[in-house]
Image (tube, rainbow, N blue to C red):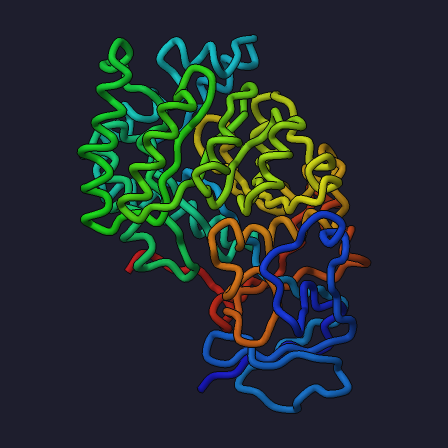
Length: 417
């Protein structure tokens, strides 16, 4: 039995004696912080914490956290971590004035990534994804979701999901996987949308389910991509194979994606840059988690999701990175938290709740991650000395994470195998 004792913690963030499953509305601003605290991790889990007056004297390993805050790891519930190549040439095209949609219409965007992925060997995909995973862990991420969606053919979608499964087997952090065959229409199906939807439902979904390759099924329900009716068909079929829905919704316009997601009991609906009264009413009627991706808005210059309206309506909000090569080539969750405060006017406390507890809820991992509670997985990070919690999003360009702790051990990073 190995024990880690962290003592003299300036603030133990998200410390709770009574476990919560999410933070909603006004609750999001009520971030629990235990000052002048200690924490003990045993066998990968949090076993004790409390005020320094009750701190035990001995442990196998002791860290002094004077002046530092201890956080639960970020829970990043929306990423496209597995891809074959970067797309900086499209970045330059946007600088020259083309929109994200115009680039996609020229064969760029998702279809560009799909061509490259289909030609990329599985071992190369794994090695590159492993490097990205190590990077996001260094930013404090302690649980992550990874989507397919750059295959757009049965074999290439399965290839992506097999890479994700291999990554899950060697990863020091929990990974949830999502089948996103409905990410875009391949060129060969542009004149026969129904044939591609049928391929997804009749061939891809059965094989994904038979190999146990995914936890969720996602659809890009958006203007120029998949309609509400197509989305509904795919999600209902996914349920038959035990895959719960997640949705890309309302990124470019009011698509109806939020409503069809809620109707199909989606775990989360993600993006929501366009979100009005009808979408809020739908979300209030169900248990679906609204997940916002501000670094996507930052990178491609689209509106930010109306976080304040959602929170003020009494809804929970999660934050995720949307790490992908086209619209968000970054998995930097501290920057996501900063953007949420700077651009979406979320309070630091709300943004931290959104990126920890509510992010865990968006992956159905709220019982093991997202807060500091006895029995939860000891995935944590320790900041450098800083004056307050608000300093973390305020100092958006500074590297403030000093020590990453995974499964109760100091993370030093490692190679595959």
